[in-house]
Image (tube, rainbow, N blue to C red):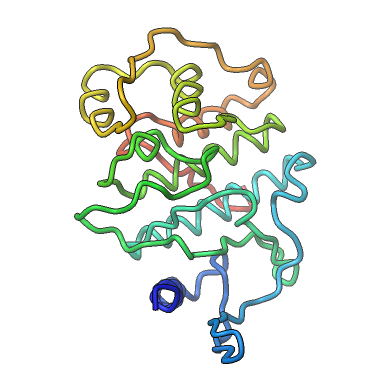
Length: 239
């Protein structure tokens, strides 16, 4: 019953967001009675962003940034948070020459109540989720997109923590220590004992020095510590 509930939720959200060229297109669904599983029939996509992530050209980077930015803008306008943005969930539609956001299995309609903080893969998880906040919004998707864009530029994951605590320490080390107002708003939910507010900042890795300034600023705008200040870059694919 739990799996049926999740399937119905994903199907409902795919139907809600359907019609956008950068969101996974579904053609139907069926139930396999032999295995008691429900299945969605979607367009067959050629490859994931993960498979070519470290060989991305300038033009391809621009296409990915625009495609995923457009997909998220559409989903967010429909009141839906994806909650699992990562290179594996970005696929290429070779028939139409566009990148597509897939897998809405963790997606939710934005609500004012509590939502699970245990979403998104750790390397792409925003600080408020890592700190176990249950009230959050579309900013968690924008943070994940910023991490993906940074990884395309530097050819390595931006934050590679092996635990939630290490992931937070890496984020604060690179992005800077949040001020006390942020700390009091987001860090009070940490459930795993004392967590000392860090005070040191590690400069962005030298890989960043080669990144175009506009692109770098776009990434930093997505990685703003305040979720309400994160911004998706808005440019057309042919710009």
